[in-house]
View 1 (cartoon, rainbow, N blue to C red):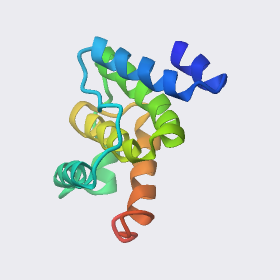
View 2 (cartoon, one colour; view 1 turned 90 degrees about the vertical axis):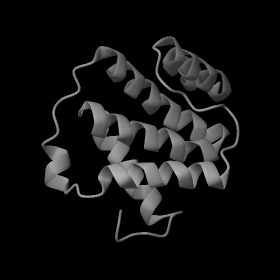
View 3 (cartoon, rainbow, N blue to C red; view 1 turned 120 degrees about the vertical axis):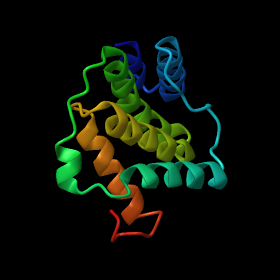
View 4 (tube, rainbow, N blue to C red; view 1 turned 45 degrees about the vertical axis):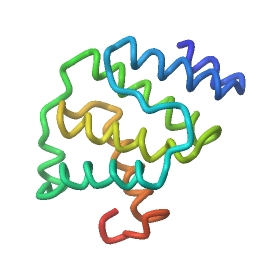
Length: 134
């Protein structure tokens, strides 16, 4: 609620800090609040690409449901982070997207998975220039 409230009143910077702190309190990885280098973005993209290697849309749709509340809360924080970092530090957005997709692939699908995969498609079709992969 705190993250959403901060974002609603235009305090995106504070919302990012709160969301990252919450993820860390859950014991989940959280990107550093700083501009992401091209190297870091490409490295994380390659990791996600390896996880997706032989998966079809049907394989992904048939993944189990996410049943770990900690990861579910972390995924919800990533939803808020995606909006906030886009406003404050857009180079962090791919890292948040990759983290959400990775969690869905490794731990199961949740209501936040569809937007995560859609954002991945947006990245691939836009800045990454790979519409055939998006």
